[in-house]
Image (tube, rainbow, N blue to C red; front, side, top):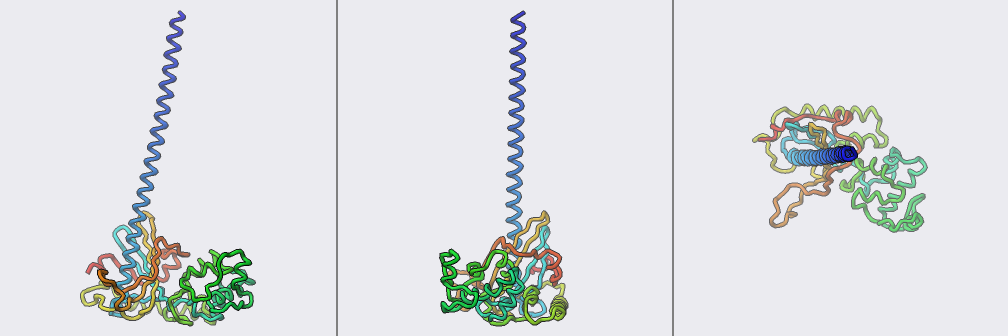
Length: 331
């Protein structure tokens, strides 16, 4: 009798042990499957991002080609217009912005900088100080402007550097100016440049965003101007191949200064990638031995560019001039 109870207890214990082992194996198998699914998802994400980046890079290459087309009716002007190329499983939108159509940090006078900063996300009481701090950064002296900032003001703010008292080398340098913060800089970055070399803005090539901050321009005039420019661009373009045998790029024409190219790719699965590049016509003799000759010099190249706005949103779609099929560039 006792032996029978002992055997029953042993069988019961063995059964519980087996159930525990099965549960543990089930948990381990589930955890392994979840890990594999996560890794597969990560790999798919990396693959999609790489594909999107490759499509965005193709947009930069196509923009360079279209800037070289000698036929003005097919050349892409750097006036803020947007062009779209449709691939089998992706789309890419490309926007060209002439640097002469932006506000030059080194050449703009106080009035133009005031007009710019007056519309930036800055407290009204701090606007004049920020403008003067920018002017103090780029001037060659140590004299402090009213509400400006020179060496002492940076030291008092606990900063370990002082103004360069030289021209800005890049727009990113603006982030070092006393009073500048990330929010203001992000708002400014698509409106400013250090590559124009002009104290005024070329309104023929200025983007919608730049025109909106220009002083003494009526809003209705801006809209009429942009609409007329867009209609001219659309009417000049034809559905033919933009790079056919009679129209192959020969030599740079038209706008020869620095140009920003923004290329954003959107895959069918929703993956995106954006590149912001600044290029200019390469000077003769710039190539080094062994280098492949290129008509352009790259001044700046930003992958995964964090723009304030997507080229695929409704506002940017209003600037879309024309749409191409990938096959139109196969000639």
